Amino acid sequence: MEVIDSSTIDRRAVLAATVLGTTASSLPSAALDFRSWERVSLPSSSTLYDIDFDTAEHGYLVGARGTLLETIDGGKSWKPRTFANLDEEEELGYRFEKVSFKDGEGWVIGKPAILLHTQDAGKSWERIPLSPKLPGEPNGIVALGNNKAEMTTSSGSVYQTTNGGRNWKAQVKETIDATLNRVSSSGVSGASYYTGQVTNLKRDDTSGGYLAISSRGNFYLTWQPGQDFWIPHNRNTPKRIQSMGFVKNDANNGLWMTLNGGALSISNPNPDLTTENPQFNFVNLNSGGYGVLDLAWRDDNEVWAVGGAGTMYVSYDGGKTFKFNKSADDAPGNLYNVRFFDKNRGFVLGSDGILLKYVGGTSS
Image (cartoon, rainbow, N blue to C red; front, side, top):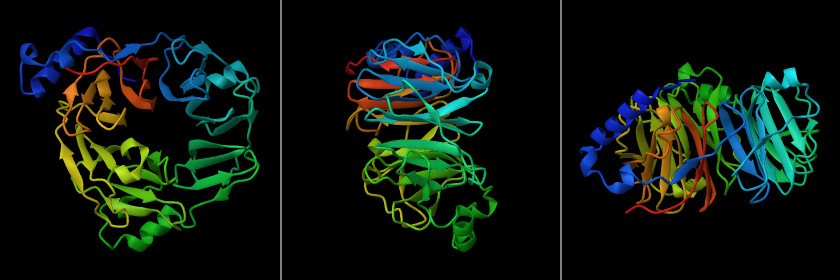
């Protein structure tokens, strides 16, 4: 992972001021001095990939080199934990990428392919066998409670279990390859270059639907429960898609899309996801070319965007305009994930053991 020195940080701040079309001295104080996030000290310097909470105070962080951290104070402090059914050397070889909890029941997935399950809030974990015939590698897991969970794979498969992972039922009847063979002549640009892998699977918390990006970033797909197959969509721009998600985790609110070079587009509410070309509106993020990797809505108005080289931007008008924010200047590394559990509980995860905790405040 890229590590930058302090001189790079300074250049980044100057660049952020420049691309906003003004000098540092004339920027609003909120853009230059205000810090809404503080760094949390961790007993790990590994890249962090995911975070979830079982209660407001109890949660887990997962990451590279077998990183599993637990908090019992709402994320203010974290302690390392291990899986009793993995020896120390074996655990270091895993990259734990997703963690999900509901009502004391939790799931963790990682690479090489591994799935772990707890029914006692993490006191003990069971390793769930994965079939060698599983299409693709597991890349997403959502706890649904009472031995139920939903798992996705890199091939776009969606599975559900109702018995703690002993059996899984496919939710998508047609593979993405088969779908693209049917529609490749219908105008979906890049479908003929599909490599068989999708990335960046995001779940709509309201409907249970998903969106995914082709591994080349040249088109994206959506799926809703009850549909037999994924629906492919054009990106409507020559730039490759870097990341996507649902506005406020709900497709009814719209979709957001970031592109190579730090560009950002957001669709209108209630986009028509049955068409090949849902409409997006360009947002002038002024990223200075740094890639934007994730967005999260704290509420209807406050939106945070994070990305490469510790860049962070904030909007106070629902995503129409953004300002550079210096909260991550002391955390030189890439920021991969921003997530709010409620208006007062937010976290940013990144490389080199970077964890930022939202500390609140408003812009002036």
